[in-house]
Picture 1 (tube, helix red, strand yellow):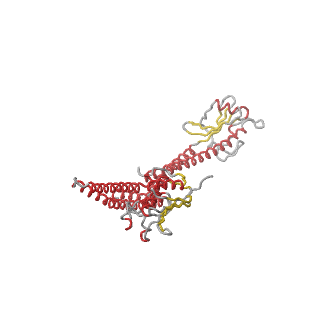
Picture 2 (cartoon, helix red, strand yellow):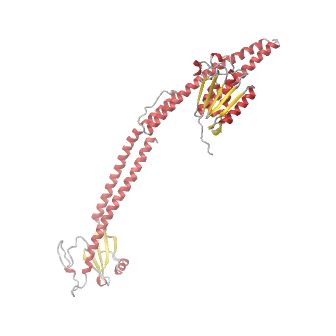
Picture 3 (cartoon, one colour):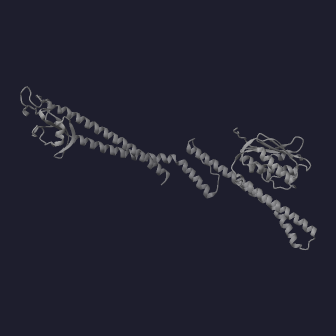
Length: 453
């Protein structure tokens, strides 16, 4: 079942329930008012019982009852045509005053009337529906007054039919309206579906959806366009990463293949030359391994870290990373300042600091210390090398970018790109600028969090 059909059915059901409730209330209130009117009419006619019995010593004479509409008499101005009135005497004798139909005489009803309680009930006499009231009369008599409900029943039946037809028509009209309204409302969703199917079938991400309005559908179209744009950027970055990685991999692979071919063709090579070739092979293998690891890390991003962000002291992370780098390289690394507390992945921040220190180690003279400065979420690594030309500063964080002076140095050109990625993962930023007094200052910044006392 389509969404359009489900909405139509749902709206039709809601309208049907509402129409049924309104129709029931209308019918019930109309029927109640009709019954109340008839009951009031019967109670008024039942007051005739007050005139049954001796009047100033004159015994009751049924012939004194008026027989024509509008005729007046001692018993009031109503005639036989509008009611049936029977009197049940104390000895059980039924005296018909108006109407010839025999009203039912029930012992329980008579007993209730004799006890002083009036009883109102529906009865059927010779196939005709009546409303009857049984009231107490004087001298131990009971008066039964009834009215024919045929016209009332016919009126209520007609009302039921009209309400049924009107309700059915209203539900059908609501269903048709809901079908067209749902079609118009879901048209943008249909366009989104077509665009998604187009992307799935063709792989093309250049199919933007028109954004109409600020409602939920318009926001969905905007989100879909944003998703397509993000996917397009991700695809371009992926292709760029693959192309650049392929280009960088060719150099060590070519060197490895050449050296291995030389070793294979010259089994009797001098030991010194063989040792040099084997050293070159080991170096290229190490470079190749480092390159593959960095490409995998760059492609995996924060997912490769496998660690949720936690509130951490940046100073502790940086000092631990600096101590490891100092032990590994034998260089002097001086850390100053306090970094504060930030919501970070400690392993990722440590990796970014290690990459900055590796970069500074390449360029700083061996006898010069490397400075690490911490200040309110800023981690800055300063070297004392030749510095980076201003033309290259804007591109040092690009993947695989290596300045002309760096092409003879070991590395893949991915270290600073990984630093930028880690900073962006944590909502931060990176920078590279000349260091006062010579060298380069490279670092990143992440937002701090408040620490409860």
